[in-house]
Amino acid sequence: MEYPKRKDAFRPMTLGDVEQHTLRAVKYYIDNLPDLPIHVHQMLKIVFDIDQDTKELTKLVSTDPILVSKILQRMNSAFCALFKKVDDLNLAITLLGFREIRNIAIQYGCTRAFGKESKREAYNFHYLWEHSYLVSVCTEYLSQELLNEKAGTFVVLGLLHDIGKFILGNIHIHSVGLEFQGSDILPHQDEVCSLEWEEKVFGINHTIAGGLLARKWNLPESTCVVAEHHHSPSFNAREILPEEFRTEIILTCIADALVNRVEGRSSMLLPLPSYRDGIAGRYLVGDGIRDSLMEKLMKEKKFLSYIIN
Image (cartoon, rainbow, N blue to C red; front, side):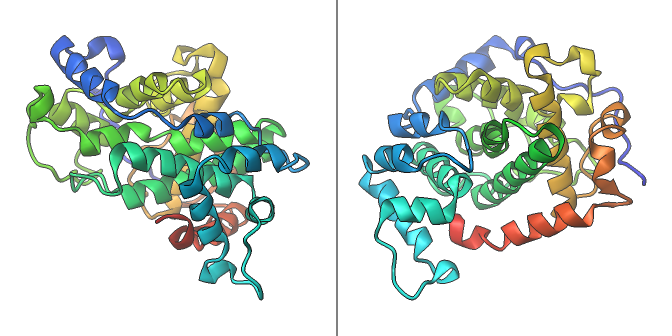
């Protein structure tokens, strides 16, 4: 299998590399975003356990009529059509499953902050939600197959790993004192790494912005660290990664790479060979991925037009 040529001269920025005026501008924008609703925060703390009672989750969801309507709408969509429409929230949560419920809740919270559509062509919010959902499916699958634990945690990491792209897709450049440099169209990956393009255009990349937003929203530390470092295995040796959440970073990075293969972006950079020889090597086959994982991802992809508004 041939992998894209890596530009050895490029290494992504870290937080300390960002110029102070850029950092102040981005932080100002983030600080003025609405917080996630408190019940969404609480839902993130509920672990996806197949034996878990849905009553606690139902109680949290029921505090927000809009979220209730979105869940029931999803349940009663054409894809999930039953002989009788479901109006029991607890039943809807049970039938949909915790991953779908949490995805709806996270999307709902983020839409309140960023709106439904990006202001820039390079960041299509519909695609970003689709990609993030598939990465969450993949992280859940890999965590269960390889670790047999913490599947719920990995679902959230997959859903939120690219949260920084919503900032770059919506930030009001002139109002916060930044200057937009260059084209709004992301170059082909064979020409330039997306992180490199972001740094040239914004003076910051989506991983740093994502880490800042995750901390502003007081998300779990694992979510903050993975948002900030999920591309690090493509550039850095294992010992450079934050030790406490090293497994979460590596698994999310690999899941991201596998989903990119499913989505036909084979030019996207993979983790370094030392990572691929382990976990990824069990699922990458030639220029694609193993049938079992491919089948699962393609099945979940069919849900997306109903899950993503």
